[in-house]
Length: 246
Ligand SMILES: NC(=O)c1ccc[n+]([C@@H]2O[C@H](COP(=O)([O-])OP(=O)(O)OC[C@H]3O[C@@H](n4cnc5c(N)ncnc54)[C@H](O)[C@@H]3O)[C@@H](O)[C@H]2O)c1
Figure 1 (cartoon, rainbow, N blue to C red):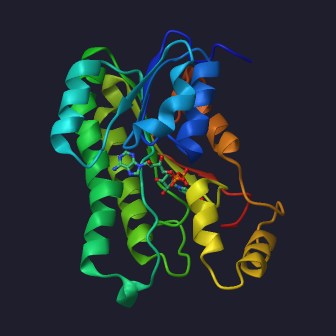
Figure 2 (figure 1 turned 120 degrees about the vertical axis):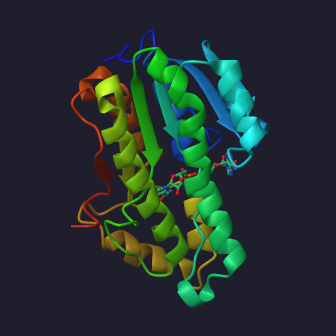
């Protein structure tokens, strides 16, 4: 199938690599006009040649940059808030600065992005907001992910709240909840572990499907949530994790 997002304008944060990048490619393939953004504009170079894709630096933690982007871009049909960080550690390992930075990027920046772009979406009659959460959230815990799980649980609360408050005005808002997905930062986290090969094999074996996910598999789910095929889907925690959390 193609053209599922034809005529739609979308914006993706953290489109430079990983899930955001794969979703940018998928949105483009499905015909969307796309604003591909990332804190690191160099990482967007591979998308810049694609017709209908505009690449733009955006640090979602910067309130004035977010406001400026919303003013410049105007109404979106699809907003995919993908940017996030994955700090490691149990509560006693988590220093206050790391805790605060995690909430700043994973939660507060998402709140600001929605606050900045929502008025024009409402004025245009609605749209789809996809917020990057995780199965590690209010859905399930994982070892050494205290600040991360807390932040992604907040994303779920934020998404449900936006979904409920603006459903009647045409806004859908869903929390995307992947399990392990093979991205650059995922690989960095695993390679930093002692005995990383064995740790990775043991972790992979815990997945009922026998492997971890790929960014393109998550991107395919984003296409669905962005499209009219998901017109009756809002306020949901949409899990894609190879059965890990079963
Ligand atoms: N990879 C996984 O296993 C997994 C699982 C569940 C959820 N997630 C979530 O998916 C999202 C993307 O993770 P990933 O692993 O696909 O990508 P990644 O971590 O490999 O890449 C992150 C991208 O975010 C950009 N970025 C960092 N700070 C930014 C900022 N302040 N503003 C804008 N962009 C910024 C980076 O430049 C980079 O291109 C995160 O929110 C993460 O928590 C990932």
